Length: 385
Image (cartoon, rainbow, N blue to C red; front, side):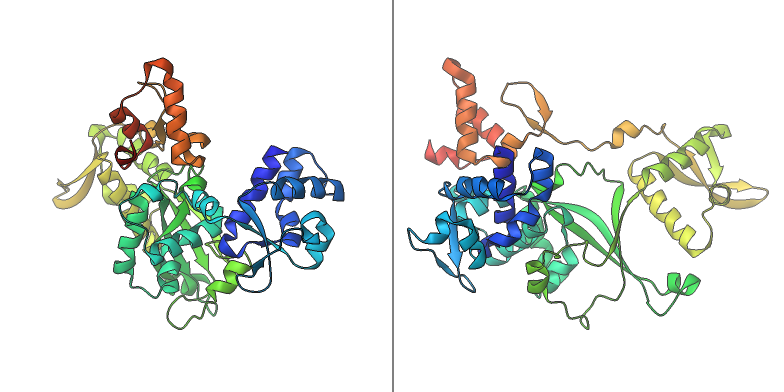
């Protein structure tokens, strides 16, 4: 039942300050109920309802807009059916919503998040595993991309969000075949996720999300962001085809071909023909892969004379090792000198709870303020010490 309560709290927090109507909570918990092996019957609903109302961080609200809290002793508090009929909403406290967004140590920060930063974080949090593209967020806040870049950079530097390279391909509905490929509009952007949802993506720097949209984005497109958010559709998965493009297989194929060649070098045009990098799309794909190979210092380009002609060649500098490109996501454990995979305890608990656990783990030995600061990623605790 504890896992079910946790899932319910996540659903409530994801609806931000508006909360979630009681009738909408149950369909959202079908996955958690199935994992717990529990049926969605009235008995389970009543037990879960009682557990949620016993938490001081959950309140009941009725009415449109922000609504008004239910009066103490209201029949809807004890009778689930009454709450459903009246459209009562479950709303998480501001502190709990802040924890959901990852703002555990904001009360210790020198500066608070700006309204745009907080609004961005809330929209990203509401999208959960779907994420939101940076391009959509720019339109939502009516900001230019180069200005909004600093908003995203600030949130990423505080480890509140994670960015993943993304391209949006907009198809022309009136074209097909080669004509559709030529008329395709491409937007380079980022998909943005809360850190709590991005930690299990395990995407490396040579993987990219590709979104194919049915129609053109831009100033002529009218998108009702509020409506999408209320419908739960705000994010990159809204009416789009989503795929993850991995460049590692293409990089490995080129390196393998060079590794088997005499002198570890080949003419670029021969490689492109052998690996089917042809036509406009193939040449564009080749440039993308070659750029990544150079950045990884796997190959180098040089000019050579072949049959009295100067041609562009490629030389292998070091053997391709897929281990080098595995995503690295570790966080210091409580024990000095050890590193393990990032745990939910560090990610989900408020900062003061984490500090208490770290001090308790050291027992009578104690822990220095410097070591405590390194492990908790916070500097402001010195003022409170």
